[in-house]
Image (cartoon, rainbow, N blue to C red; front, side, top):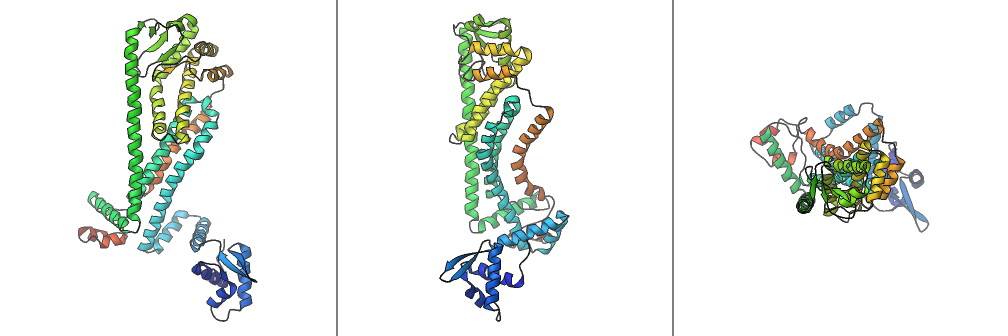
Length: 445
């Protein structure tokens, strides 16, 4: 992109300043005397062909209007100039030396607005595109534990981005230097400066409502969901101890029931439960596979993972991404337990045990070897998919870490500046006479 020539620039300034479609005659009359109508018409038509102007018929003539704003044009020029520099940091420093304090404040606010918009856009991208893409991916079946982490982090990162966007709207970020007392004074001045601006209070209130509502809703649903699961597990475990008997050889609780079933009650010290029907139909190898499956649930704290995945879905049940996360984490915990059992027993023995148990239901809050996903899990065990390689697993772990780190880095960038540069808003300094003003006199204001 190149800058406009003299006449091109004058024509564009006239069009921008009017903000409405103009005839060539109206443009020509506003220019310096001596500009011929035909010359202005020719240059205006050139700007139209270059894409800077659009036109609409008005009788026998055309009315012209800008396709881009003056701010967009200026921003593009600045971006092009920066791209042409081999040292962006030096270019930024030179630019910072040339702008006034008021312009520096405007630049900071523009960066803040971009950061807030980035957090909201990131959350929307995760929920609208990230979750469906992950649900369609085949790799989580090859690495269930990594898939569980991806789903949990995706949901947590989306919620964190929305909360942090609310915090960014509510609390302005200022670069300061000095001690804690000066930091608090600068924060107070920044808040007053923001709330004194038109719309500043409304933005802060909206941000506070967003952050507080989301945080309170998630906290409430976390306590309610995990608490309900724990209480259900305790009640179920109490009834099992009354009705069942402990088998020291199997290390499991056996209850008299004709239907074959096997499951574990939430908690690392809670029992694995087997029915007499399961003991009757499973051979020793299959029984060992089932026990390994259930103990993998306990050692991996799969009950807690499933409960955490259910929290966003309980808090916001109309969000498809959160419902998908809940269902996928529940499915992947079963795959992870299947893999743990297959590491101790033959894969076919695990598959046969699942077929034998079929769709046997588990107790309240319990995870069972059977269930509605047993058929798909049997097919997976028979197909024996290759696990992800080390490089792919490492890349997946880095991607998962980046998901949760991105919103924190985006919001923490101004906080890092707080210890590298001195800054306070000029208007706020004028409103705060006294020692703080004297301290600010030596800063970059």
